Length: 251
Image (cartoon, rainbow, N blue to C red; front, side, top):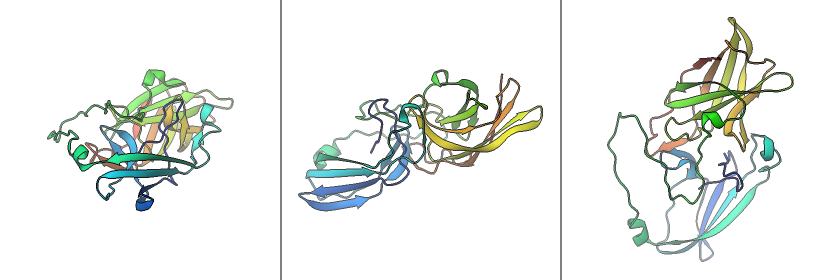
């Protein structure tokens, strides 16, 4: 299951209220809350295994809660209310058995398979570093992830935004807890948590307001207080489990 903004294509991180009901001929077949998931071919999505009653036409109803995270820009007044979508699905075991797959045995090798090119929904891909709004402060690697920090100029100080993504396909990493420290000449000028946020340009990221203007020579340390609280499959089973601090020096 994918949930996204129809205009920008940004994937939406629904934290609560997401449910799926499957019916056939007016009778409920299954109803459940899908898992939040991450895979190399689909990125961030929702899913679960559902048992069906054999071949036939099924009606699927997806309900979502409103987004409770910080929303900026054109997203500021959107996605606050629950939504419902319904569609029909024609299932046959023979068509399922024709789905192509391949087995990989690349344990221990770095890399990732390419995203699925025939998906009927956008993928949760973070913007390239040079397309992020604001001033890029630096990048760093932490436990198979790449963290990009940017500063956004404000009235009383800069906002600090961090965009964690997978290293090869740039998939966003949701449901983390991050904090940051900005140090100048050995003394902290900011120390505090970052909160999940969403806007059309950055997509899903983590940010905080600071009272400081980030300067050249400052050290920015990003701490992962909680790793992504999502299910991982299709190549990410053991990724993003241990994520040490990342420190970058602003040029």
